[in-house]
Length: 150
Image (cartoon, rainbow, N blue to C red; front, side, top):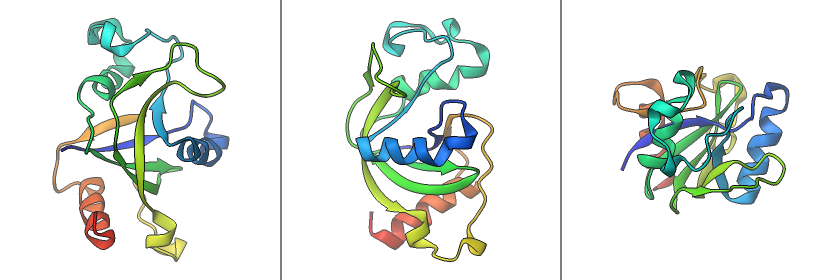
């Protein structure tokens, strides 16, 4: 089991929360490319633009049972657990891209009800695996899971 963090807006920060809630409503987490390489299981990481190489891990490393806090505007929005395998959608409808099925674990605003107390988790990339167990995001997931019994 791995911990990740992820943003769900397709280069549209002004509508980040709308895109994030739409993904939750559909039951998926996902990402997309400006120039899609196609199914990530059919390409080598070297074929992906350098700035987006960590997306390759989305298809090859992320797995059922992994936990992913979803971040919007540098604040945690929700914690989800991956419940299905990578699924490439060749002809996306609307903002759909490549997705993983998820189970919602909880919403951050329900966990910390006073926004003045929200922890900022600055993200400069779309998705990344968390390896440093002492990082803010990693400890947030561990704490969140213990509070909701996940």
